[in-house]
Image 1: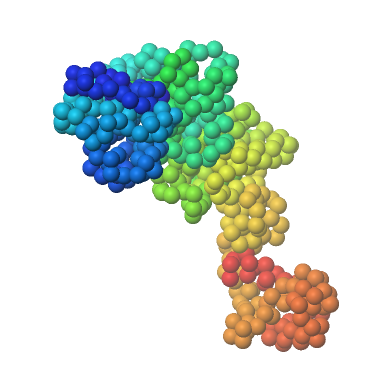
Image 2 (image 1 turned 180 degrees about the horizontal axis):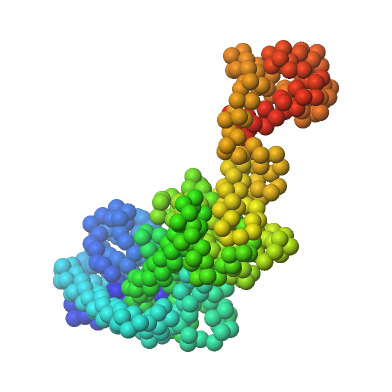
Length: 552
């Protein structure tokens, strides 16, 4: 990429102050760009020099050090991408060693012999002045172009119009990758086949390195498109310290410059405003949908009636069938660093689910409150639900795994109910299904209908009765284990897992058969229940399930 923020070695040699100076080695590097001038008092300066510096020194160093140290100086300077070195050879030396000249030629590292009468300060001042003027001109141009870009937005232009304005300056293809809305936006000036190649290039970079989509600094590299090697510049589109997309340019028509990168960075800020505007619209829509949903599932009859009156606005038939799916994204995931990033992930999940529902042609509503994303879908009949809903849930899991694989989430599926007024029951089911995943079912997608006996145990109005049953049946055994540091509860669990087969219990518990027999007798003595009695046996097994379900 061409650096326009400095001045080349070739241009420096044209300055009047250096008219008596000449290049003695590394002439192939005369286009190297100087962004700063420094003076070398001793070789230790190489520890803190920067890329693009032009180093000034005298022949004293080369007179007093070994040839090996001299060669090392040139090698290190070239490796640190200094633009070149200017040396007052006379009166310290007649000429530089031929080995030094050969190395500089091979590395294309310019060495300029400076006339001994010229003070270094006389060189530094005009060079810095030229660099300053060039950088000022670039900033002035960027400011003018930024003003033009803002005018495009103020006249109602969108991201595509911004890109059209951008390519008038950089004369190269550009595109925007929107990570939130999962789309590419092009300048509209290229044939579809070429645009497809650019898109695949960005996708390939993201597949190769997951960090690309989170890169917060401008990236510059070389890529091959259509068999042609070129520069690529990727500038992040930032909103509230998070990356929502990248503005990408390719040096397809001409080589990109530092000015192009600066202009792109300025343009990316304007594009961020367009992204923010689109996100704001989405947030407003989500707000109204959430208010409608909260009214619909409310126990307040006035609020529910208010929602039912607005049902037609969302194309809901009051007499149709409804189910609710509850998606919860875990904030405890180590990959989610802040509240802002967590909210960004939630919004992205909502967008992806919205895309799935639209593609399937469903009548639906997505509402977000706190950590919960509720997805209510309308069905014409139980038969349609049985045929289609499983596919919808599976596709949701597939898409979230594919595009949001770095997050943790749970999906609870409520039962189907007839009538929009009864939809709140499905939400209750979905909530209970998610809760079941915490203590009872180790799955990511949980269908309440498939929970079996848990559907009874999770009823809130039964909680006190279930707790009382546990306390009178199993709690004495739990207390005994806690006090004596024994494993009678675990042994009881294995008893039911093996259907009372004491030999298998012995194998699973790694204990002697007689020890197992002793434990069974102690369990019966402490609980006052007989494992030979069907009722007592069922009571103990039920108490174990209650202990797990209620996390007792």
